[in-house]
Length: 332
Image (cartoon, rainbow, N blue to C red; front, side):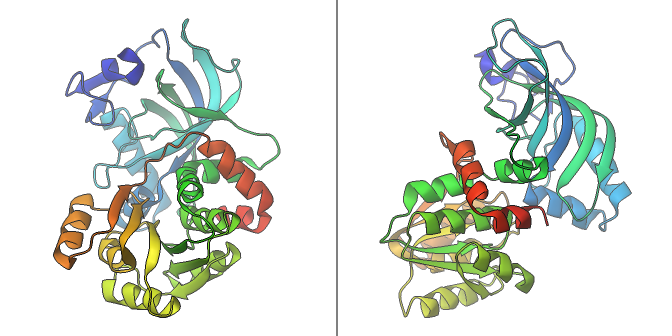
């Protein structure tokens, strides 16, 4: 069971590392682990928003907060949002039983920083306007941890932004078909744009993109959505917007990709009975979603958008290769 990283959980001991408050990021690697010299972190959108707001958007304070979390917990696991992000770096060391790329290969981890042992020597680059943080540091990838080699034909910042949310378009590919009407809450953000673009590629009948703030409408339109500016935390406004756009009908599938709390009600109101809501947002309260659906008498299926889907990295990278406008907007 060590391939799941339980041996590095310090508080409480023996739990899965995502559940642990503190993990061991400094002990030598074990037989099936990989050590990575980290170049960049991509902090997940919900966590970045929370750190940004709590630090008043001040770059120095934001860096200090990231340092503080990692020093205390041995991982970048935001105690407020419960989320992390992912990283890019070069393979520094492989355990004797670990199969993997050659030492020096540039890789992106496809598991959350909320479970990845991490130490930071120095933050080398941080802008309040970007979720990408340059660091010098070291991370440990467990035997169970997925990764992707960083391709050479795309800018590193595009790869980082894409792989951070690559589960979302993979879910869209799995669930959408030419008969599907889809609503995407947060359609102008990274995961929202890729969800819309994949739904368009899958031939979805209608794609309604719900966007806030208003300046995200352009990205949703570029991704193929019929974009509507609406406060996605206003359930009645969201429900009415989707109903009006679909001529009195509701959506077969609703994706929640927004990085703010409070979108559960609108998503459920926008979904048909016997439809499906996919919560691909770390700002979601799953208990709230379940209780809202119960209170509204809605029988739609509520799905946690697992960030891992087989083949998700390749699918997302191929998608941005075919959509250069979206690739540019992911890092703008």
